[in-house]
Length: 147
Image 1 (spheres, rainbow, N blue to C red):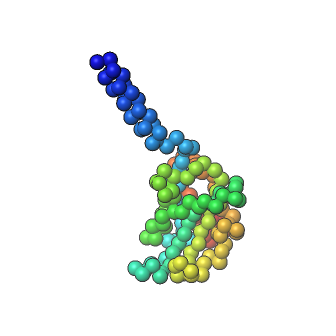
Image 2: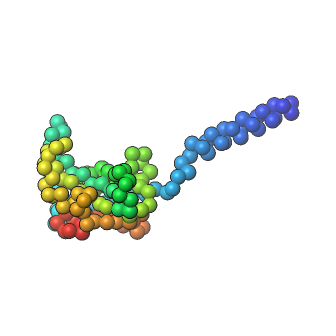
Image 3: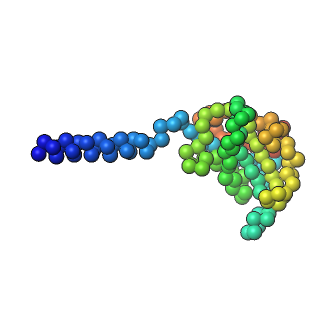
């Protein structure tokens, strides 16, 4: 009977370690919510079912590490300009300083940027720290140089 108790304890320990190993122990991440507009008005993105319509891309790129090629793309709601940047796993973006990039293409995926690359990775003047102050959103107005 002693062997069974030891075996049961070993199995419980192994199960606990498996659960702990499966949990994410990496750095904290933060979901970024915001709104994008042009002079306070919703940007009129023309969307078609064929994906040949326009597309508005909002994404974050590290402002601290130029070698880091990772981008954090938003899901933009074209009806009201709201967006969420939650990462591919839904956990959010690591803490850091980011360039906020915006591309508004007239035709996706190769259309002209209707913002004339004003907010491209090379030209954007919008820099934000993540996490944002509690209770705030990332507000972008493309009619302003600093967003």
